[in-house]
Length: 331
Image (cartoon, rainbow, N blue to C red):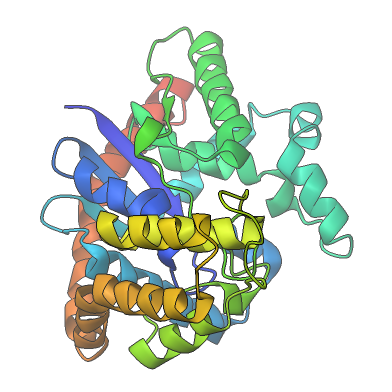
């Protein structure tokens, strides 16, 4: 059975873009692979979040993961900082990661531009920590977006370099898994191409949004005065509404409004009302489960503890063997 490893930074609540972009596919993958899904709280420290905020975000992401359908009986679901072996392997891999390659990393240069007053060492060695996350469990595949592909290539480089330096074939070279045609890109309600809370909170529909909040957000979605010619090309903001409807509505609903648009009869108010109703119906079971989990902190603690124990079984074996290969042994 193949091993799959993936993490998400606890930077806030999960939204429909997260669900269709990864979570839905994770739910399928847990049925057919040995999956490790972790909440990457150490990674988020590069932006210096407040302690109370970080802790709340970790809990919220865990709740959203579980509510969306990840099963702790089928996958290993854990918090990164609950597995201390992660940081030890991170330290050991730093010894074979070179300054030049880390400085050339596109994401480092991008982050350094965006936060010039906080170019910390953790930001520079971010790819090494990601490599530790992946190599710790000997991943065969790593689900990655386009912005993370370079990091995975660096993880492969570190694995290959370790094998070469210590004359072993210990680490696998993990490959990217991008879900192919199964990946659905969810646009924002503000007319942007991607639903992203970093750009505009109001453009996101969160899995934990109550129905009335969803309704208000969708009714405020960007639109225009309507088409002036039959079969007119849709502007980006209008195409976004149709893409959202394609994700959550019945085909006949989508076809009806598409026909209304192409014949210049569309009423965006009616379309938004229907879209809001369909999003609410789609997220209702997830939202109900979120409310249930929020009221059961003991269960969340058990899930996190069990996930950490399962992850450490794999992680401690890896670190023990890596120490042996390197020659770090007790006298």
